[in-house]
Length: 293
Image (cartoon, rainbow, N blue to C red):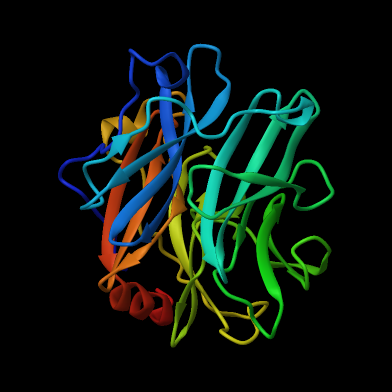
């Protein structure tokens, strides 16, 4: 099984002790490649443990410069404890961000849109139910409809929409697998990647000991409810100290996988404390997924 290769400068983004809103943790970023730059929207926590979203930009995808202030913060009661785990796609004529709102009432999936990645307009609840997260849009319509992956525990579900407001056709497509690394629950990672072989999905799986790893699945290009391939192995697991020890130990959790010149850049949170980068050629990941090993 092919493995993602960690960048030698990992972790690439650390908490900033001089900045109250990101002094404790920075993790689980969305990253898009546009106009020759890597644009990162990352989740951060200060000593109040409230999650806010910051913005950083890079030429090479490794060295990032960040804005001083957060670009997206909790705004109402259902986001009271934070806005979490963004995923971003460019879809038709603007950027769309899916994110989780966290409050005393639990978690709920939300959607926002932007034309510049800095200023965001909320579109409200993406799916009208609590305790649903890990939702991500496909970067293009399929069969004329928008497509979203989401999680009704413990599986990855899919849904379709004509207008990004009303979603139908909900059904599970990836379930946990007993006895394997993803036996407890699974959730979507970054946006599915279009390839000739199908939609490549890099997803996270959790085992009985609550260790998070990353694996691959291929969905049919015309009918993404159909899983073409799903290897038994994983492509990344916690190994480094900063992945094994942190606010939540034994975690690699990805929300972004932009493809630049044939290379997949997987940005992930390490133990909910810092941000790491691991890469692999897209063609190697697709080949590994098709082998199903």
